[in-house]
Length: 278
Image 1 (cartoon, rainbow, N blue to C red):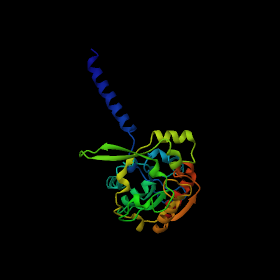
Image 2: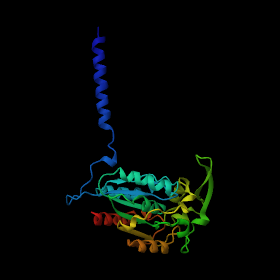
Image 3: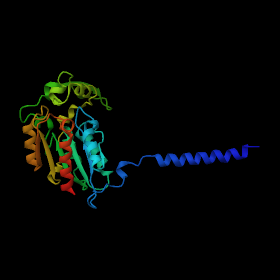
């Protein structure tokens, strides 16, 4: 006798559950409404943070939390680390999914990626380089890194072959456990760098021989942070590249990862770029 009423109840429950699930689905960040500056009607740019080799997006956590507290929309995509011909178009496609102005930030190898990726994307209003490569068209990172003395990376890497989909063999680069901290993050606690080393993401050795095909800094204003204790990219090279790009340059006594050891300073630099770009 109760069966005829049970079916409508089930249907109503299913409909309600579907409505609840739809309400709980997250809105993609790229399509979210842009944030506004509390003090004005100016739309705050989306901050896009691109990590480099031997790292992942979690390296930006200290910066992300500070920017979010200040009301900025922030996105930190995974850089594939498969070489510039793959990484730059991937990040470019990600940028094209974002509405409104963008401040694009790159660390280390990520600087080379954003230099290529931002070409021809009009809503990228500022570039920020954090202890980063800033190559020009036709340049290779393997040549640049040896322009000035000081890098420990060549002596710290371990090469690991891997199979490519086409049957050829590629080479991934890892930082050795006994060299990771000194070459990459000497101003962080040993307990932290041990975790970073264990979870590092390798990147393709081809990244050092790939040629840059575009230089976005020629048309987009840029900011650069020199890490004066950097043992990965020589500080003298960072100064050279930032000067050539006409970047607004700041220096800090930090290792190759100032966004981890001094996230407040890196956040302020990004904010400077965001204000100027607005």
